[in-house]
Image: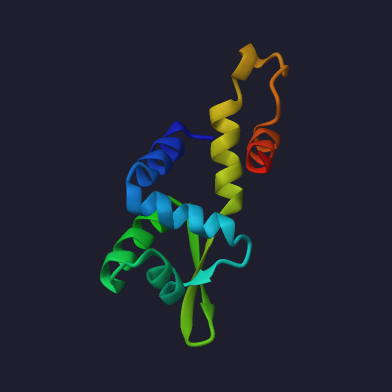
Length: 111
């Protein structure tokens, strides 16, 4: 992975509204949500949502897809996996003794 991908991804997520959008879409992966539903749930005006979705899409973190007459967005889970893999690849000095990142996230959710 190129470090520029990680920098672009993290920069896109380093803003509260975009992080909230992204987390909502991850919760609804893999199908995603229509743009109107995202706007209602996060109480965002359409133009504001569109701006933030475009930033996330440019960073390859979300993907638009046609859903009838509307456009739905979903989290790009391949990009998420590449990013987390890049961030964790040198964990524990590369010895492989660390708990899997996804397992850690799942165990936290149960608590």
